[in-house]
Length: 307
Image (tube, rainbow, N blue to C red; front, side, top):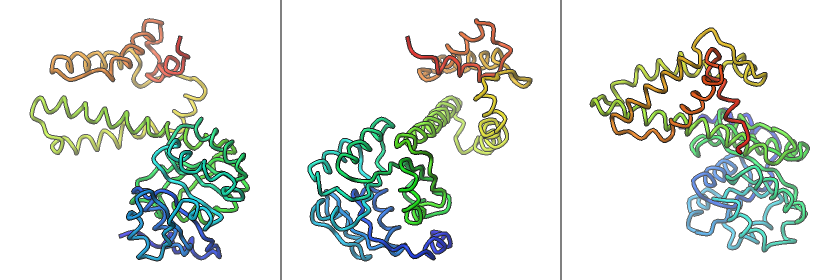
């Protein structure tokens, strides 16, 4: 059951302004449901109209067209599959978007967000771009993290409504593309961790060792080695300042570890496609004389522009 204390605290404000939600995938449904629970008159629209059935029983208004949905509220929250789909649906409306506040929570790239901000301005709309760093089940909870970029005054004007969606709602900057840059950076960490997790279990499976059996040791390794090393403020500062000296585990030692993983994986018939680029960068930096530095030294090779 969801913790309602956070929502109740947010709802103590006077803002109960109408809002329209365009797009009722799993995330859009969660957004609209949270606005309803927060006391906002909520209009919804989706290409498959039946997706709104449950929301309508809870009090939402189902728009019969996207134009009707836009006209119903001054604030329009968009959560669609791609920016391309968003433009295909909204571009034909033209002047009907004038004087609307568009809050776009569609997944995409920073450049798509910046181009969309220019398009919105041409339509006469105010525009915020956001990135949701949470799953649908987290929407409305204190820990739900949502980034926003665009005019700060616009964000502040609608902050109570936006905070209803997540207690960790955060304004980043005037740059509409910055939220999606944060999004891609954090997702990069997720997919890297996810793939390494699967590769590790592929290695273990060759010896019939189950994921369940090793779980206590994975937990220990994450909690006391990996998470502290990746969340240390001093380590982050050192990366910002290109300081790679270490007295813990140097690049030469880590290269040997990578070599062993790659060799053993090949022997066991497990793909090493994701590991060989990392191994190559470590090999390069050791060859350049940086073997005594920390593993973070390969950051210089990662951010080096492609030839």
